[in-house]
Length: 218
Image 1 (cartoon, rainbow, N blue to C red):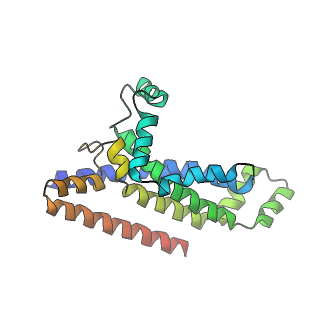
Image 2: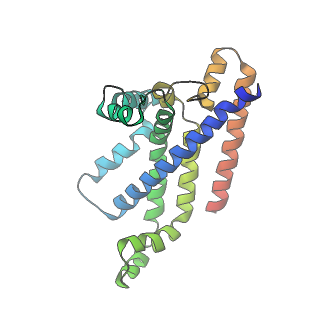
Image 3: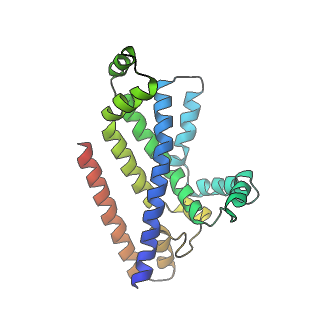
């Protein structure tokens, strides 16, 4: 029971950690760019970024299958580089969790950057600071509560991802089986005890993570 109990938990923590980091890095750049660089079509770009937040998970999973399948250029490139298909692999689980976590991370970071006083950034520019220096030494310190919140929410969202992961990465024990997919399989096979134990861990860990995030933000 012990190994079978901890296996999906460890996989979930690994997937959520990598997915939230990748989503945070991407969202950080895009959020700052779209906050400070108005252009035609900005609404369309932001709408595309937020789509995974409202689309059914099965639609996101199907999209990932089309983009990352063995017949797609991206999937073929991945298989050429790593000598294994992307579908039903650990990287597929990370990618699926990253895609669904990205909109939440992006929106949180965008709100945080929007609250930074532009006069402070302009003051740094008038003193000779370059854009990279303004971003690192002015914007980031002023928006750090939003950064912490975004990373925490991204991790929590990636930890709870089910639909897209199930379609794109499957439910392979010890490889792609996360807590949500393990709970689904346990319920399907009548193993209610394990389903409850995994659910309690997910609830407790998510509560702790969100509590820490709220404390740091305040």
